Image (cartoon, rainbow, N blue to C red; front, side, top):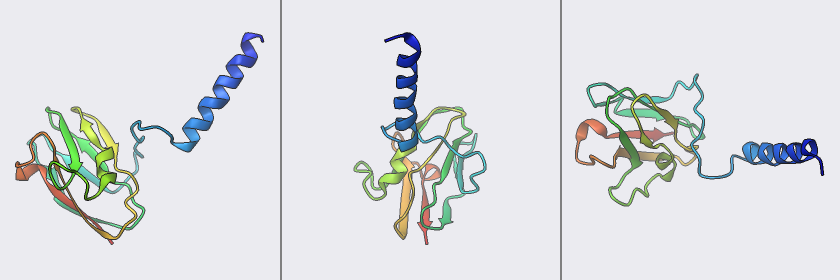
Amino acid sequence: MSQAPKRTIVGAILAVFAACGGGNGPITPSPENPYRITIASSGAVGPTELAVPPGTRVLFVNNDSRRHDMTSDPHPEHNLCSEINQVGLLQPGQRRETGNLVTVRTCGFHDHENPDNRLLTGRLVIR
């Protein structure tokens, strides 16, 4: 088989995986996402409570000079709203979205590396 058909097959396989959103890789954030939680340079999240409609993804933006590992409550299980765990570790300047928040409920979140810091906690209210 020549190189061109092999590249076409590999490209097609990669396109299928990309379209399915398979794997555990980061979700590419939508730059227009109006639902966002920002970690300010002061190390505090804002807003601390955000109401969103079911099916929404929330964008977390790290504007701090330190990394933050944003996860679902409670600590250390992180199992209240697993969609938040898709944000995970954000290096300074990084942004990442949650999974689709489809269940009507209130989801707490915190920085796993600093779970007792009230400045790094908040709630997403899905309604």
